[in-house]
Structures are given as structure tokens and as C-alpha cells.
Length: 94
Image (cartoon, rainbow, N blue to C red; front, side):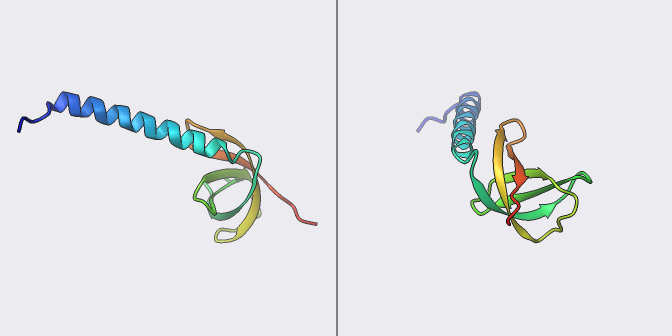
């Protein structure tokens, strides 16, 4: 059986990675505007927090008072395909 040339394997692999990324972006965009529970994981900046939704979508939102390892409701405002995460807003409950 003849081997497929490495250059062709790399080309096919790159193509499949691009398709997978596009499918992931389309999947994420379906959740724009929804409110999802988010587990706060970390903060890279003092005024921002980052976490994961219940279906493992990464979200960054502005809030400096919330602590890690808490679950809060966050509205998913828009998805940034370059960063592969949502910008969100904390939902205040009355």
C-alpha cells in the first residue's frame, strides 16, 4: 500500500482544522444573547473575570468583586472568534 505524501497529509490536516474551527464558531454564535450559569475560574486583569458556562464556553466579563469558584448567571453578549470566547455581562437578580 502506497503512503500518502507528508505535504498532502499536512494540507488535509490544515483543511480539517479550519472546518472544525468554523463549526465551533457557528456553534458558539447560537448562544449569543442567552443567560448561562458560569463558573468563575480566574482573572487576568483586575477588573475582569473569566469562566466557563455549563456547556464549556469560555466567557470574559467585567467585575472585580466576584471570587473564583462561584457560579453566577452571565448574559453572553457577543462571541469573539479571534479570542475564541464570549464577552459577557453579569445578570443581577432582584
